[in-house]
Amino acid sequence: MDRVFITRQIPPTGLEMLREACEVVVWEDELPPPRDVLMKEAAQSDGLISLLTDKIDAALMEQSPKLRVISNYAVGYDNIDVAAATARGIPVGNTPGVLTETCADHAFALMLAAATRIGEAERYVHAGKWQTWHPMLMLGQDVHNATLGIVGFGRIGQAVARRATGFGMRILYTGGSRAGDIAAELGAEQVDLETLLRESDFISLHIPLKPETTNLINADALRTMKKNAVLINTARGKVVDSAALYAALKAGDIAYAALDVTEPEPIKMDDPLLTLDNCLIVPHIASASFATRDRIGQIAAANMLAGLKGEPMLHCVNPEVQGK
Ligand code: DGY
Image (cartoon, rainbow, N blue to C red; front, top):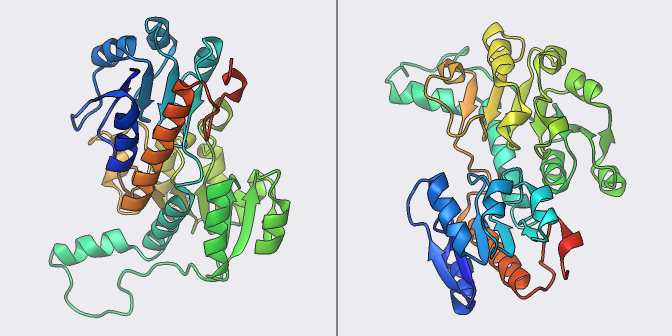
């Protein structure tokens, strides 16, 4: 029987699927397995269900000759050295699609929360500062009819755009080379990054982390944005230069940031971003609905089971190794 190591507890449906077919070992702790444990477990396993917190690199694969399948419980897979897996003929699965709508809901929630200063307002009430209704209290920005810039027009970016049409927003986007028809349907306009940064009131990031997207939002990009701009990041922390973001928010060069992701994760408690009222930070929960996290587990399990049988995964990021 194949042995599968899962680096954390996952929702029940996917877990059951795996237990029916494999010997399953689950790392039950709240925190990720330490490196030495991960190495030891991987070395004994045929399959590894990993999380975005687990570094699955060439060294780990090198000392795990039995390892035939890696299935990431996430759509993003920047925690995995895919080239190293491909070189060893190991298929790597991910979970696109099932989390699209939930992540888009969350990006929109962050946008509305930042625009209307929900986090600050809640802290204000809890601190007992609410004394009266005042015409100038906690003024924010309108989302309706504003311009939304979507950086990365894949599944999630498009789902955010669909929501934005209900708010009468003008929609700009970059990327999405195959999204012309959908863009036309939504009335979204493809522009270059500089135009998007210059013209948008809200900028939402939906790009994977790659060498070319690392620090894409740097001091120059932030300088290009409007003073009232709100930056929403549900992609990966490293896409934004956080020191530059802090400087821009502090100086009022942009109005607000709402971050689901940070670099590092968790954010360090002495990170200056945490001192700012105009920076809303939540702990990487954009896909965290009960239903979606269960569906992610099902896809991760299905990918694993297919990979162990030598069959094509539902979603494989290096399909060239499948069936070899
Ligand atoms: C992913 O899947 O990549 C998200 O960041 C977590 O759901």
